[in-house]
Image (cartoon, rainbow, N blue to C red):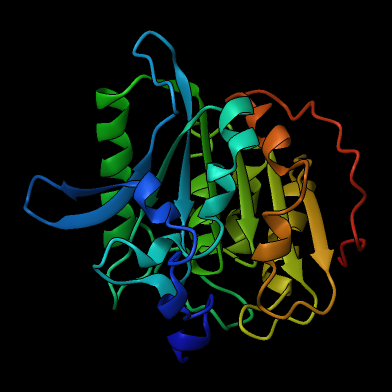
Length: 270
């Protein structure tokens, strides 16, 4: 599969007009054996040590892999820079960058199904290390860890909440997928998933089956299935007006009590 068509390989236009990349501080994580991962960090405008803040980990798609520590900001992350969002939802946002020839999850993207490996990928292990280090360095509310991602990052989102459902308060996966046989493990986590019915890069059944697996196990995920967006569901998903109010209302280990006013564009096909 050609990664250039996966999650928009448009690095020539990376935030050059908005200049918003500068709002995210460039950082580098090094683990105990010397492996590194670049990432960007956004702190609340009026960060205070005495306040505990929610933390959002944002996973980019395959087209934004590399080492420049900039490409991963091209899709979705500008949502967290909007003045009203910064004022209403002060939070810490971390945006790691996956190495060029690796994946967040070692699972094929275009297949009808996938098997979750026994252990997280090397790239994902580095992200877990980043999260651990940030929770030590900054004032993070452990009850409000959120995860979201698009395309390859959607796979990362499903991977984390099926491996570590007890750790995350909510998850928003966009045009991703996972191992449907593990979906039940995510049932306790509030989830809002998005996909387009005509996506030929990541088949819509990948989201449908994860959502259905959660529901069969007693979970109550929200699922919005768009029409005619192809592989780009993220622009619309990250513009859903209730996405952030829904996300930041969630607390670890608690059922989703937020009542969506936005109606699903299309009923989930089971």
